Image (cartoon, rainbow, N blue to C red; front, top):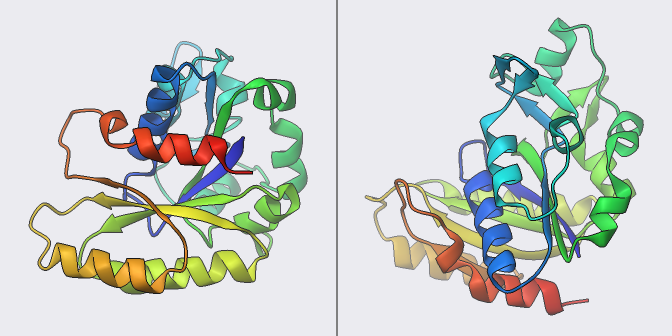
Length: 226
């Protein structure tokens, strides 16, 4: 199964949730692969630019691939990818993204997660947005909702946009990024009533520990749904 993972915004825990799903699936005996096609905010290394989110996905995957297959578009500044690409003299296009995917490894993995950058309507340049490519691929989408003040609007608009782009919203995961969020339960219940997609899991506020322990049931649902 291949899923595209997006979020209601940047810094809402897409990577933590993705890595947790991969780890939970591996604990159940599944082969797993996490990909980060576009990453802005990379550090130099002896082998080229490296992004901490892509490295986290690699660490959580059971299928080992070279870094440049996991993160084919690695951009140095931690800014909007289309701006970073323009500054680097690069172009990000659906065709380039499609050609960069390790198709054989993706098909062989029991669970493959392709993590986006930022939120859903991410510009990639030349007036295009990332969903144009995701729609071509036809992958079902997992929405990570960063539970904080304002998440209702962000989540509902994201779900509406995902569906308007012709994609199936396979479910959403509530990731509590604000430990002091007021009326957390009431907000969660509002989203359950309004999103018209299954709540796959709740991930509590975590400072360092893995999210895998909170995602076992989500993996079971994702890997048994056609």
